[in-house]
Length: 299
Image (cartoon, rainbow, N blue to C red):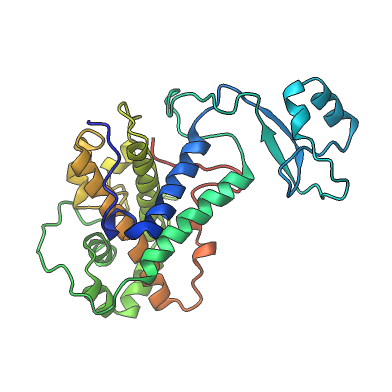
């Protein structure tokens, strides 16, 4: 696959215009920083709003005294409050290649994880809030290329999300929405159908866009789960036929990302439509991992 950054124009790529383009690139920049292993593992020391080292005890004092490169990073303000810990590097610029070890992930970093989560939610929120209720829907009739696993009602809504049929989504009845959002079937690992589906869509979008942003030529193997519809959908039904071209054909991969992101922000749009108390900040499906670590179930 040719190594080039995906197109930046158009809403469906995750941003349009200079403002949203910057916010989108900030997300991928932060994720790249988080997921790129450093040759220099650094040393974790107490810090505060100043971003410098707080020498508050004998242990920290000894660490700093033994590392000359830390001497210039000491905070001299005795009133500066110690509020966090920060990693200080001797050679911050020295990094390994992304996915060099065949793994996706990084060391726990609450501050960076919080920034990544904020950037992702802002991106999704921007698109969800700008959906136009009166927009003409996509009227193209495309075949459903999978076997129904949920007696129709879950699959029907997923179809509307995948193809961005906004007119049909606005006419979607609340009682059917409730059935989908409370549908639980299959084994314990599946549970809530829509949560199961969206979990994989979010992780696919983030992981794939990160690979594209960094021009990764040799991508890690995509998790086998995406090829399956095991009790509940794990991927976009119509796009599943293109998975064999994932990270091999740039145009096809970009289209899959567009469809996945459209599904994510329309999911948020629909929840807000039917759930007045819905809060994107507390939606567990969009968390991307744990409090101190990003964990993507992609590879």
